[in-house]
Length: 423
Image (spheres, rainbow, N blue to C red):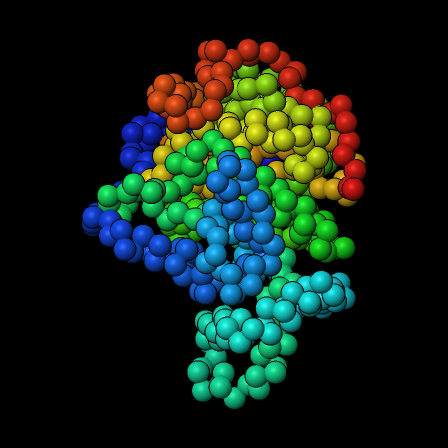
């Protein structure tokens, strides 16, 4: 599928996978919401949020949009959607390349937020921090007229690079500061809401940019995997191209529309690499990745995540949550989403890859383009299946078929049966 060459070196698989803290300290309950810039006690260190997800007393969940600064602490945000302060593609990029104009609704949100003196001060401080980080001195910043700063502040409400931030930094009952709250420590219901909230943000980003051809969704967990903070969050970036991997896959799909079935899923079934499954999704140990990787595939006929039924989204979420839980919070990981671009006619299944960043690319890989993997797919499958059985016994994951309980049927992906059009 990708042309990536991977060798598995058995002896290197015995190296430890987890990144352990060397200065473990007791957790201070008074500091649990102040540990990093994403924590709930430091809301004003991030740009004004776009929306938040709140758990209601009756067990339902609600989305609150454009919460004013005066109401930031009126509700407990289980997940917040905020702009990334350091965007991959800035609003100026979209202006210069595509003639982007900030829409009226974004302009109205900006004006309403900055009409409150506290909101205006928040925006100015965020802009100052970004300017200082880019090399501007405090003296130079002080010379910029406030109206110019406020005009620039409007772009904070119109960006196309978002972050979905979870409430917890540590698990609620943490006694030590390395008891991190990751995807696998959420309940299955919390993880489903997290996933669904991200899907809504993804659809909104597509709608916000006429020239957006792809929205990349990913999650970096721990510093070795590229995370700035050891705090659970996903990122979404609207792009004006598909990216080379998606283009390569689309080219293959034009010739072999069912290649994900025949070359990936049926191959996993034949080699007993299926990790778990439920009625609408399947998880496998992946082949051909630079790092040990677990893949979760939707079995739906739909390609775009927001066209999936709630039951189908929940099925993907449950398997993804389970493999995160089996991985553990001390293994650096990248979670990468893949879906058919809305402007592409080729069928492609929605699938998510969880990569264990347990090795560092070095001179051998750079010089030969042969990637050395430390855990082969069969061993990966064995490790994860063993842990999933334990997690199911403790009630930590949703009900699912695990390992040899799985059907091991071929041809179970249905993505070639339908095409989702944008709408």
